[in-house]
Amino acid sequence: MATPSRSGVFGAATDQRVEQFTESVSFDHRLYTHDIAGSIAHSQMLAAQNLISQDEQQQIEAALLEIRDEIAENRFELRIELEDIHMHIEQALIDRLGDIGRKLHTGRSRNDQVSTDFRLWVRDAIDEIDRRLIPALQDAFVSRCDQDMDVILPAYTHLQRAQPVLAPHYWLAYCEKLQRDRDRLRDCRHRVNVCTLGTAAVAGTTLSIDRQDVAARLEFEAISANSIDSSSDRDFVLETAFCLTMIAEHLSSWAEEWILWSTVEFGFIKLPHDFCTGSSIMPQKINPDVLELIRGKTSRVIGNLQTLLVLVKGLPLAYNRDLQEDKPALFDAVDTVSACLKLAAPLVAGAELQRDTIAARLEDGYLDATTLMEYLIQCGVPHRNAHHLVGDLVRQAKDRPVPLSGLPSEVFDAAHAGLGDDVYKVLGVEKAVRAFRSHGSTAPKEVAKQVTLWRERLSIT
Ligand code: ARG
Image 1 (cartoon, rainbow, N blue to C red):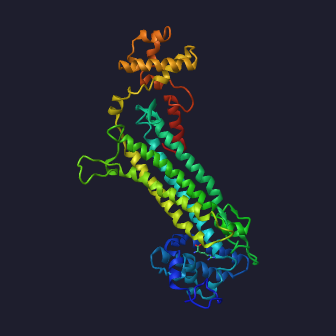
Image 2 (image 1 turned 90 degrees about the horizontal axis):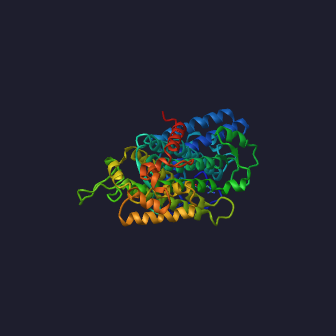
Image 3 (image 1 turned 90 degrees about the vertical axis):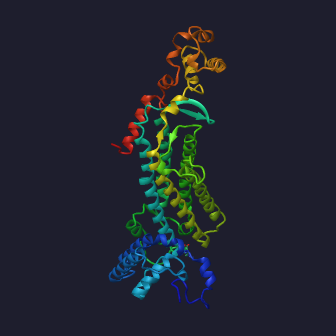
């Protein structure tokens, strides 16, 4: 059977093996609503430009809407000889309307059609992730700040205990990372949101189309300026994949952290049991599989970005069939990141801090050493000397072994005259946390301010 894209130039039908090999409908069927929206806008423009009649446009639009319903309700047959979703829809239109259906493709090519449809799809995907999924996860973190405000946790550098922080300071750290992810997506959206329809195959068209009109109907922010560029451009796909990779990276390190925190060795957090799995042999096991898979699935997202980078690296201008391979990679990245975000939010909401275990070991690791050093600086000791002195005090405490607050005042006095008198007011993890001042620090006032800002930003009442 003649397919819409096979002109009279061919002397033979396509080999079936070629059809199998070259088809994309098995994955690009996901673009059908966007394809139909694009075609309706295109037909409206064609009518406004008198390239088709109003009556023809109305017939085309009505038939396209019917086809959309058929696909949505699974009443539509996909046949690989029609290659992609775009030709399926066009063929279905021709089956219904004959020559009127054959007019829809006036002034466009599949190259610009595919690009526009994909841009519409990516725009929706970005909106779903940026406006719904990431805020839901941020919401889960911010919503637990009040209840966890009394919990102090060690902050780590090099995975060694470093300084004491309030638990909500951790929660908001994740929120900041996710906010940068949102900002990146929103910025990327501007470059996605450009209409390429009407650049046709590669050089534009001789017909009197109105590209601004189509773009406005599809709520694009701009139209592309160069038809050769638009026919080949997949920057928007790669950039979106990169944004998704950053989200996955953030989720992966958070997952890794909470996997560690949920171990007996750390004992910081109890994961919700409905988000854990058991072992078929060891009855005591409660495994953090969801977190492990969030970490594991990140590799797929990175792999998809890699696929896309390699896909386009050697392509001459303009459209090349290689570009068809962009869709499975980005679909998978979007699906994977969305799935991870959807599970992360309830997991964050349901996790419980193990207050007793945390408190029991909080004085281990000399978390207050830096606070003591800064106290000495306030007493007029130069930073480097204070740093050395406190190192020496920590060594003495380790020898005994006691926390810094367990050293007698004579030891402090020997380190620095008069230090023993009131050093105890900054020693111990609780007091050390309260001693913080700087903007963005874990000072309880600063953290409370940040929680309020986040609640406002996310409209949490
Ligand atoms: N199925 C193809 C794709 O998604 C359509 C390509 C149309 N252009 C072409 N010159 N064959 O990229």
